[in-house]
Image (cartoon, rainbow, N blue to C red; front, side):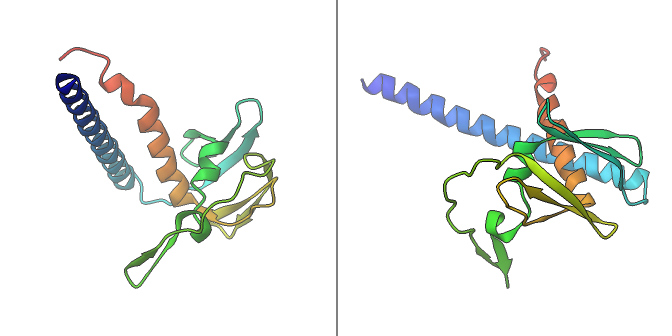
Length: 160
């Protein structure tokens, strides 16, 4: 029994280290990608077209550099940039968000999208949730994360 426990412990420790390493790789790839994008263009990215794809359950944004990013609706809602969802930091102290209640119908369905100035959009979800402003910069960063995550497997598919 002790031998099995040691094997499980070693396996769990390896899994933890692997996940930690993969998260670091994702972070570095996103950081490098964002840095290179900023060097390529000092122009602020802005959407040319925003389209709700009900079939795929994504919000497809075509940016002014003709890049298209498909944001899963579940991801956008779960990553809503508001204090009630992410918490907030005041004077270097993080205040966690309040506990979440049960999901309401329409949680991952978009009711409407409104532009906020020239820098962001606000999504109203069908369950009435309309907190959080998605700036263009935030959406670009989230898009980088989605692309790296979706393509991460290709970095490990070949033998070294």
